[in-house]
Image (cartoon, rainbow, N blue to C red):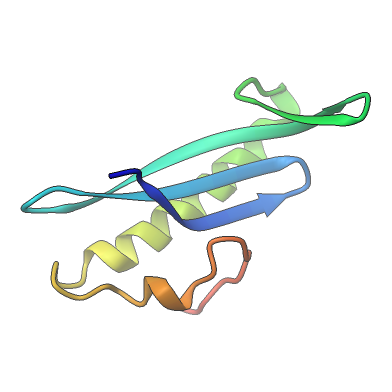
Length: 95
């Protein structure tokens, strides 16, 4: 089963995607980090970053980590409201 994107953060050209992976016993999440750039008319993604990107990446990864923790603190049988969070929206919810 392909891991689906359950949460996505975008800020400028930086993108953090959280995917859910299920095993028979636990719910786990995987995080990918990308930088979007344009080459002519085509858009591409890279996993290389400049020094100026690091502070913002740290912040975005912290937000993604808090999002994951909020869902893993719940029972395994509970979907954690993931269907209410659009994977393409950068919408923060108070904890």
